[in-house]
Image 1 (tube, rainbow, N blue to C red):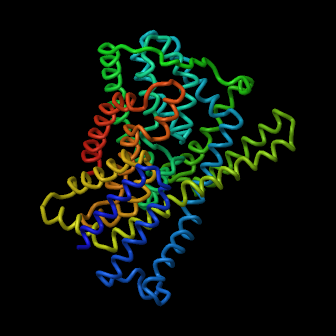
Image 2 (cartoon, helix red, strand yellow):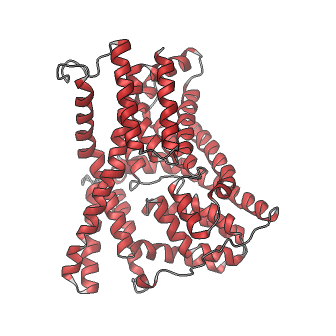
Image 3 (cartoon, rainbow, N blue to C red):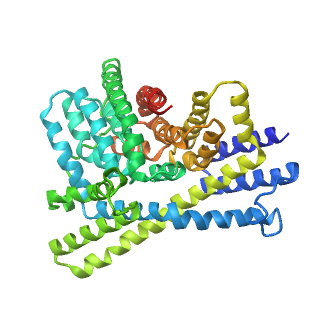
Length: 454
């Protein structure tokens, strides 16, 4: 009975999100219904005796309050600061300067599909410093897209490649990476260098090679027109005077975090928030000196704070909603049932990883988001890992990377819609070109994770 009720609730979560209902609201309602089901049909306590406020039903709201408080003060603050930093980098033109400098050598190559493959690799590297998939996609559409089309690649191929450049959320500036690191109880820099990078190298190479052949064969076997392509060939005029050295600013946080991490046995304990705030300060000081407008520079703090607020409204609430929903799934016993079924079937560690990765991948495609499903299911990784006696990172990392990969084959995801809006190509045609590279990437992810850490 409980199993079918849970399946019914999960089905409608997917249905309502596809129908563009507010995802936070859908997840909160679903979590509430699941917890009520656990209380009414299983008489399951929501909180332990020490944390309870004396009523099982009211404990639902107490749990929600505790989750908001804990998340906002911890992971939430990190994500808000990262969001503010990214917004300010875009505002002063530092992100555009970084893209402009790194893409300049590509103009000297005269092979469109080789440049396409290199564009993916370059974009994935840039994503470490520019963590917004949509933001990076739009920047590359402005700078690299005209080059690709002028070399002979179709608008469809160019759009497909650019739309997948951030399919792996790498580095300590990524909200998903920060959450995965915290879930695995690891330092963000250590998670990036020791776990993400070794796997990502294989995945990036595999996706780049697959893009080369898929886009080349796809263009050869189809006809296309330019769909009214906009071929803006340079950075916006207002940013044309940004000094080239501004390209360093987006890189500062990663350099600082790595330099003062346990990797180099530093006595200084640097975290993401401090690195971002330090980088913002350095950038603002230099920006103020360059423009000689102290008043305007100080007022630009408002841009950062507004972005932090929007991160709370859009991202932090989604994390809490996801945790609330995941807690409901745990309390009704569905997750334990899946774990028990996998263990009793004698399938072992790798099938468990496959099950969790499959669930989060399917959710990412349906929701058009890598954040929503990972935020919803990340909290389950330690429980699942403990059930099969492995390090939580071995499950958390493929879940995290798979969510971004699967997002790139959804025609409703923000980055695909954004790049298609610039090129004029149908998102549904684009995801037909991204499907195989992402599938290959997902397979290589699982294999490399198993070989290196499984």
